[in-house]
Image 1 (cartoon, rainbow, N blue to C red):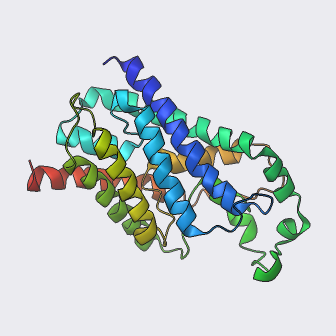
Image 2 (tube, one colour):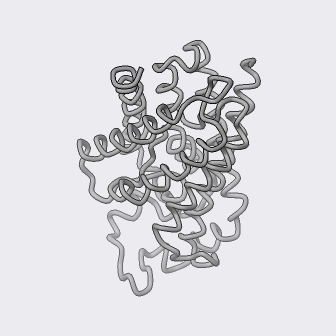
Length: 262
């Protein structure tokens, strides 16, 4: 498989992953959405289906869609280390494209939400008044693009992302490789999607379970660049945790696999 095959497959697959995953976050967030307030269960299942769809589309490259998975597979020996930068590039570009597509799909909802007097003032109806000092820091739509902790504690937040990513990558590594030696097969892809859903439901509460560096960083950059009025900041002080945590988790999962299963 050529580098261009890997790059194109990972770009398209990751774009679809972020389009559908960010899309469910947008659907739950916007008052002018039919899925408004559908809740965390909807988000967890939405991201699981997003992984399923993106992975089937990117099957040609092994459907990593995640640098943490790429690192884990490289340590396991499923791919060559020389291919890692190509996977990373496709995953990062795809994540940014997917975030832009979410903005296009929900363009009217973004405009309505960010010009809503209740949102701009920090009031959210029955939920009361949001802390005015906190609202500009996170921004009223940042959660559509990237993750953020419920309690800001650097050690806890980092450890949470590391542990959740170990679960994900170790599950992928132990499911077995497909015939091309680059990723899991068709049934394995479905199981990975269920694992992602399970992680969201059980481990996603503290930080929003990025478990994927480009899933968070690419859309966060798009959030910073898009011409959205009243969008607030992109919370760059936290942005390193959902990048570094999953990369550490992916590497540790690869090491655990070599020690316990190789």
